Length: 108
Image (tube, rainbow, N blue to C red; front, side):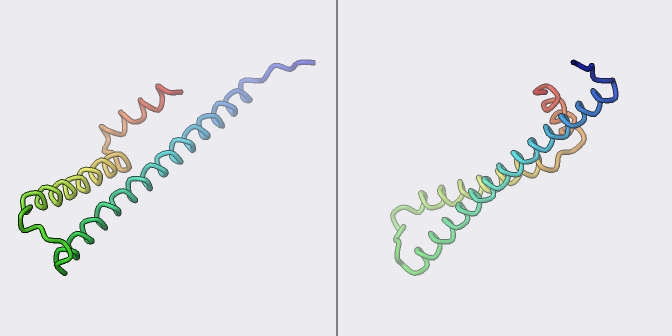
């Protein structure tokens, strides 16, 4: 014997589905935030190791000073750029928040 769900039941089911969708969204967001944080930490660790190796004369970049400046500058801008992207995504302003909500709604 089949029973038709009432409007109240449908609203409750819809709310549960919305909450599960938002929960999954935030779990994925948290996962990628951690991945990017680890990547940033590895880049910073790489710069620290290079700096110590050069400071203790374990590496000699006398003939490759331009290369060293490019690598260190590139890593710096990667860290700043990723930090900006993560901060903009995790803490969006009102304009970006509307865009993010529209993207979430479009995937439902």
